[in-house]
Image 1: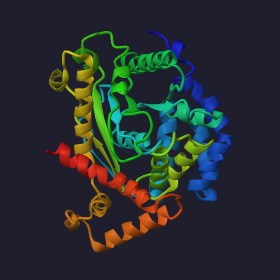
Image 2 (image 1 turned 120 degrees about the horizontal axis):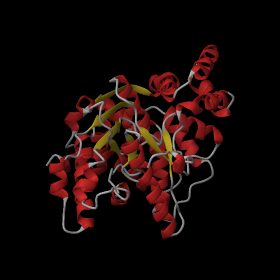
Image 3 (image 1 turned 120 degrees about the vertical axis):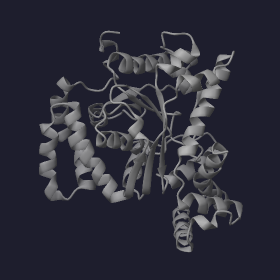
Length: 381
């Protein structure tokens, strides 16, 4: 593909589109809400000027997005760290395939740490269900987000959207030389069990020029990414969703995604770690290659999962929840009595606002924190 024209309705903004977009954003309810939520009033004029001075996407990211993330981190995190970035090459685009715990922060955290090492940021998939208001569309497309089409319609419609998603990702990487961030599954992990959806892997290779499994996946330069939050973003909203979904088809209320975005940004997250795993290389893909395509993708998904599970930073909360859930003291040496008391207070206080069977709700919440421990133990043999 030699032109972005086929993707004009979903691609990020180009530098030429930035001045008009930041002018709209400066007058938007969304930007005003960000200022009021995160910054003292006396800083608002300077931040509005900083926004209007942006003339390129990079200037928008390094000025506005970086400043917003630093404010979010100062408000809701007790530090954020990273590992593995030193193995990335600035001359090579990657497909960052990540676990997904927060709608916005997972990808923004990676972008912040990439900028910190002088590496180019990636284009970011953002579900069409979230690209609703003009304000969000402007902010997202300024931040290298592209609309990832999702469908609840027919199989034919789903296939068409998957082909479009795949075609754009290959265009971004092969033609534009851009890295891409995508979640390992559609939607966030609700139960703490990070698993790669084979359908996502199949979608990624739909537009590959080679039919061979190894070559078609190899050109993507897949890098598994794992984000670990000490306090799970939207943990109690996720607990409620899992509880309801066990009884009936869960349907999101109007505005629920936006509330999750806000809650994920402002709620305390404690410490956060971003782990960038080694790129999936030819040798590993040859090990995954099987006579049946489905088996190849299944093996690849298992490899990516094992990388993410092994890289997950286990916090005291994870070990506390594991012992509490199973009624043991196996991990008691990994946390203090004060940490356990604080976590128990956090759990009971948060669950008190939820309706339903108290024991089941507690088990669901503990599972969100405990499952990464089981996954890490399995991944590490």
